[in-house]
Length: 397
Image 1 (cartoon, rainbow, N blue to C red):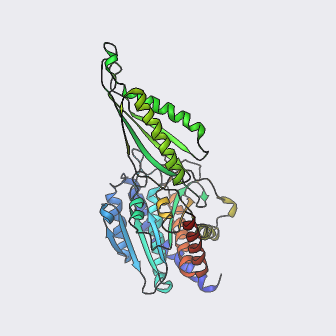
Image 2 (image 1 turned 45 degrees about the vertical axis):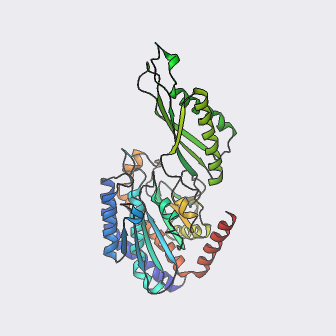
Image 3 (image 1 turned 135 degrees about the horizontal axis):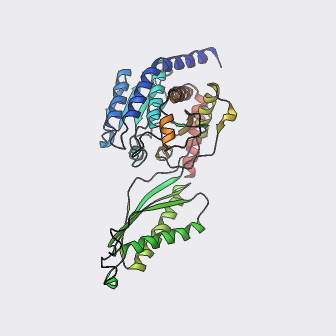
């Protein structure tokens, strides 16, 4: 590493260290005021105020989404466009048990670290405020609207109990099946009824049989969301909700057609009427840009993480970043913020992610993001590899 590079990276770390008290205060505030997806008014307001104080031009209410925003700082010199992605929605009842209060502050901290150097490196820096990742993720809308089409690198990091390379995620559809029958007294005149709950039960039986003929990457799981009101009344309405997931959008679509067929068969068998809808957004699979991921991982190691501490290949959830990764090069690394193997979406992780140790991990994640963005802004060979890999993947798709 040459002296100028060392000096610039030191400046980034120092800038984030100086901004860290603000990040901790903001993360603690958001954690103490959890807001569900598309209701994150307090978090969005605090984040946009901080970005404006830094000198970003902030567009609020992006695409008509009240709590979404895009903040941009454009250098006078040309260069790549970097996107830092902020999530800040909480989970029902258990609050910030997925650490989104740290995701958004990592993005904010990375922006604070890069700002002092952008006049020298050139390029454009954007922070995207993306509500509702857990349900109807705004990244889906933003990607579909082309808001990432001019981005050279989209970066985010997720808090976790270990360090992990950015990997893959599962494409997903969220499907609701509603069955409409005819009510009748279950003892006096059952022959006059059409049992909608029987249709739901048949749907689950059909899906259970279908699972035997699916690939190992398939995930089909559901609940009965409405099963009737009283055992002596034949239900005239019943409903179920399913997630259907797989490693590719194409195979997910194939599975959805098969699950729909199970529902249609259940309706036919019981004489009920079927209505199918999406109750949350569909997410595409994450396509990590490996050249960009290598840079992120190298900065983890440069920051003191041993290579053998960085896991890989453990991603099995679904992310709305998947939709972004099909429009521009993207990376979604994991940063250790807790020292025990607490699962995401657990009360244990929520509580541990609000301790000083977690805020230290958040600052480290912000530095890793900023240093990776700096590499993209200043290393032409890296940028060429990122672009070439993305173009090749897009060609295959």
